[in-house]
Image 1 (cartoon, rainbow, N blue to C red):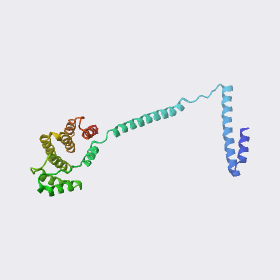
Image 2 (cartoon, rainbow, N blue to C red):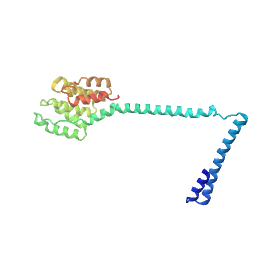
Image 3 (cartoon, one colour):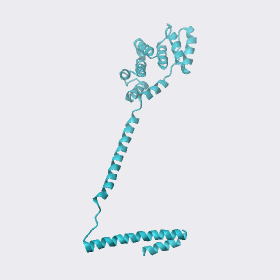
Image 4 (tube, one colour):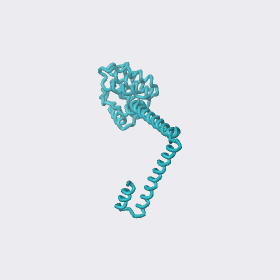
Length: 230
């Protein structure tokens, strides 16, 4: 009956006659093979007491495949978790580069009018990324008796961007000793200078000195650098 229904449906299809006959023949062969296997199994069981049991070895590949799938899934989960934690701890050098890029200077006025040209050179050079030139102009400014603490901070920032790191460290140390008003800025950039110099532990020690109270953006930026992967 199933073969007749199948043949009837094939006859109503749009397939070519040769294709329909080939499909029908393959279906009949499959059905006959199945019937033959069942008949032989029944005959062997009834007349000879031989029963077909699945071979124990046939289950091994399935068990092995399940084991492989389980291990693969576990490895994938571990990889995802590891990637999550790695992404959660950004590179310290990447954060440091971002920190250096965000450095800005504030314009100040000196009591000495003859420094007007040096000041203009300093600010123009810094904003155009010519940090060596800015550092040289800054040296002339801070040497003048009319220079103030903000001049000293700006000079240190120019030295830091010019990668004149020992000079920048000395400038920030001088600012820290000269004016407690700039303690947070001097401490923060002393830490940044140490990190840029490759002195990671020293840089972290500086950054940890920044208190959360009244430190504003510097505390948050220090916390980012401290939590980074170094």
